[in-house]
Amino acid sequence: MSKLNPFSSITGDVIAAARAKEQTPFYLYDEARILQKCAECLAMPSAYGLRVRYAMKANSSRRLLQIIDKAGLYIDASSFNEARRAVLAGILPEKIQLTSQEVPRGEERENLEHLMLSGLRYNVCSLRQLRLVGDFAAKHGITLSMRVHPGVGSGESASRNTGDKYSCFGVHKSDIPAAMALAAQKGLSFTQVHTHIGSGGDPEVWRKNIDIVLDFVAEFFPDAEAVSFGGGLKEARLPGETKADLDALGRYAKRQITAFYERTGRRLTAEIEPGTYIAANAGYIVTQVLDTKSTGGNGDGFDFVILDGGMEVNARPLLYGSQHPFYVVSEAGELRWSDFTNNIDERFAIEPTSADNSGVENVFPQGVALVVAGRCCESGDCQTLNPGGGINTRAMAQPQIGDSFVIGGAGAYCAAMTPFNYNSHVQAAEWLYTQGGELVCIRRAQTLAQIVENEV
Image (cartoon, rainbow, N blue to C red; front, top):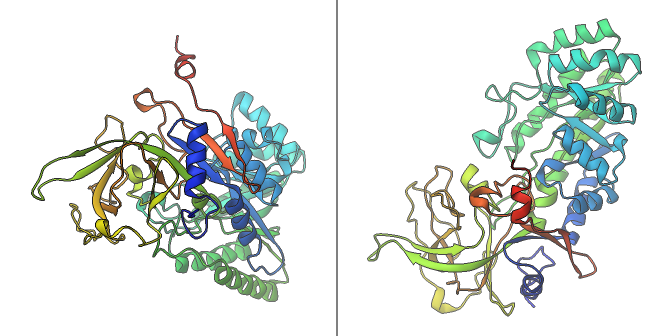
């Protein structure tokens, strides 16, 4: 039984068994991998304590939230409904932080206030938010957190940079004096300072962000007891990629927080907010090969493999040009191809091509050069796009009609973010492969009746 990759509990036989239970496409999550990544984050070095919050926007499925909560992580919610979903999953409000662009109004504000009274931490992200919650928080003695816009950021793409002038998340550093004056007027206290500079960005910028935030704490936040460095910790989805070095980043943060204590006499608890780092490599999308096509011979076109799941189950290639590992599994459960091994039949060994319109070199293992497309009526429904939106070929064993085509690195920002009702396709089911080796459905597939039930 061949594992899909070195870090997975899932084998080709598990894929075949899951397909016997569920129609493709569907998501499949590896519980053991999730718990391993939670443990890695909790072991990150710290000076005076560490709190790890799972960024639930990465994947908000109830069973996964419960697994992560039980592992000892807290929750960062990016919308009020996410906070409500966490509570519905059985997570205590005092373990939830709300960091949102939303401005609470009407019934939503009443519900927010109820959760704040129950312990939810409100992370102020704008002056208007502060004005609206300030009187309530002061009246009930509720301390607040503030997300600071540091003016610098980093991300794997421009749209994942959340800290520079092109992004509006948080209270900009130029507005902090006004925010603190308003807080003093209302008798409010900020016990945490928070930043998030982007997803999968440069570790050096992440380290600089630690210094920037500590400077903000020293200058403006005399009551701060905790400092959050946000998320954006890079995970390596593909061979050759380098994941974030949590030990090195933790040691740097520990050194700087210790130095801060020596200067100020103030001990700060650290927080991080991993999402992708926890969930990405625990998730797979199991699709089925529907068809093969060609757009011309003599090297003038591309050879396509058509799947029954594409952008409606994984929009990251379309949005970001993201690359995911691929696996080809026969209907009988034989692992015929993995991006993590070169051990394929010699008949598939050809030189990889760079046949794309971006000049991006194809760096994947040897095999047949193919373009992987979905079934949506959209030219961007392709799993092998580059960041410029052009088509890349990917090398792999030639899939057969009916084979399982598995897309890896799909535990984060896939089920949670895709346009699943485009072309009236239904939201795919989600399954969990448990530590005990069971296959459990954790979300049933949507039905057509559910798509149209609210239409009037």
